[in-house]
Image 1 (tube, rainbow, N blue to C red):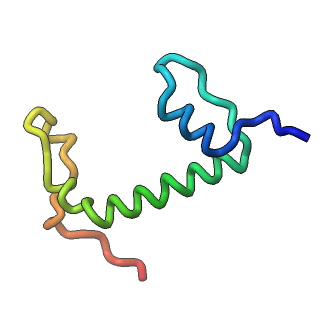
Image 2: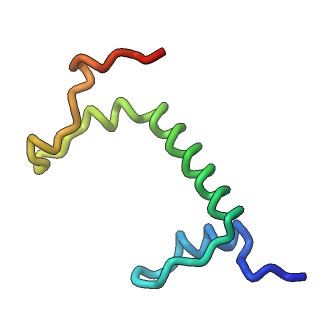
Length: 80
């Protein structure tokens, strides 16, 4: 019995290489879950490795109201 959905790998490759303006791909629940887990892991790794560096950088053409808060500012109390 074949599945009507593409494999997880095929879905990821299609979404990363498709042209703009094309309708979103139909994903199975499992594929959406796996892609979300991959993105969560990637975000956690990037934020841990480069987060502070990225937060320090503010482009010159970004209005002052849109700047992220200064990491040196008082942070909220740790709930733990």
